[in-house]
Amino acid sequence: MNQTGGKQTLLPAFFSRVTGVEGERMAYFPIFIELRDRPCLVAGGGKVALRKARALLSFGARVTVAARAFLPEFECLPAVLIRRGVLSSDLRGMALAVDATGDSAAGKMLSRECARRKIPLNVVDRPDLCSFFFPAVLRRGPLTAAVSTGGTSPTAAAWTRDRLDEVLPARFEEILEQMGRLRARARGEPGGPDRRAALLRRCFAAAVEKEGPLSEEELLRLWEEKE
Image (cartoon, rainbow, N blue to C red; front, side, top):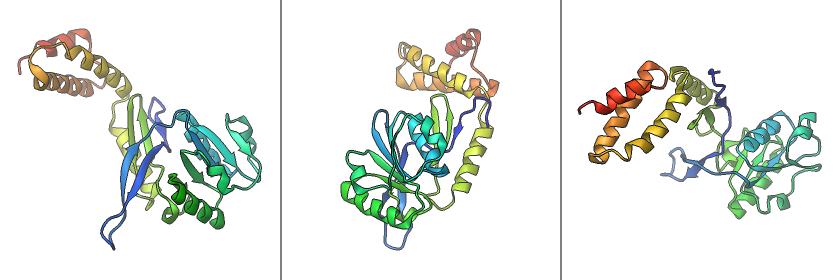
């Protein structure tokens, strides 16, 4: 875990299936989506369903969970709990759905119904029934990095995410915040977009080397530096 506590395992980022040449692996195109205030369905009341529900809630989704029984932790979630097995009618109006029941019949029903309704679906441990995957995610302030193996090996995706986490400076979030301010500041600089881009690259490289945001003195020196 990095010092900012930025690692998470789930993110509403689609890895949507794109059909390729017959016999080749399916290609999954990574798309980050906005889930704030959008309705999402989670089927299942166990540990995996709890993890999925918490992840969706952390990104502002309005979550409904359907299950015959729930772990006690579900009672603390700001989610709608439906105390029965999932039904196809539960999909009405949903932006996406997750099946964490472990029930093959439920997974196949949801896969069929979601395909018909064009609702993205993730079925835990059944990549053949999924139309998207939850990737392994690293978050550092404005930075979100998502890694997926297309369902082949979540362990490998998490390992790759962790290696990226290790190489980022501990104060990377502060560097990003400063770069956001510098980008706005650079818009008023003369010399055109190429010069401004080069200036921002120098500032970012210097901040990464320093492993923290630059002082005003350091910024002024870079700002005045000739190409």
